[in-house]
Image (cartoon, rainbow, N blue to C red; front, side, top):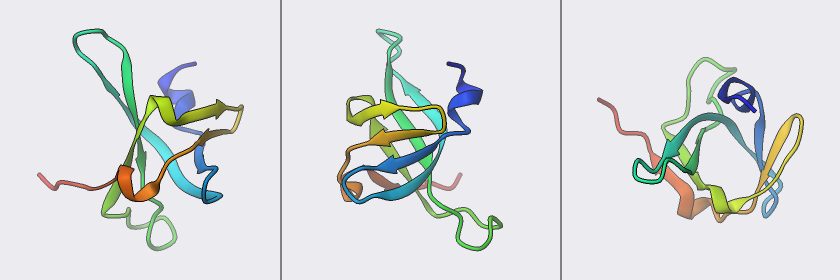
Length: 87
């Protein structure tokens, strides 16, 4: 699978049955070259015009299943939610 394909998939938390958003980026371990986390943008606030002010950084170990359209994760949302740092 390519990163472009990954970005089109919705991320769904099986614990809360909520859509967390879409995959935006991946975090890599520079030493091993392995993927550490999936970074998910928060749902938009108003009809797609404004993005949320937070993102979810989901460890790869929390992914339970990858399907053709969605990725299922099992996470406690408060633990993986992070405020976006503005540059």
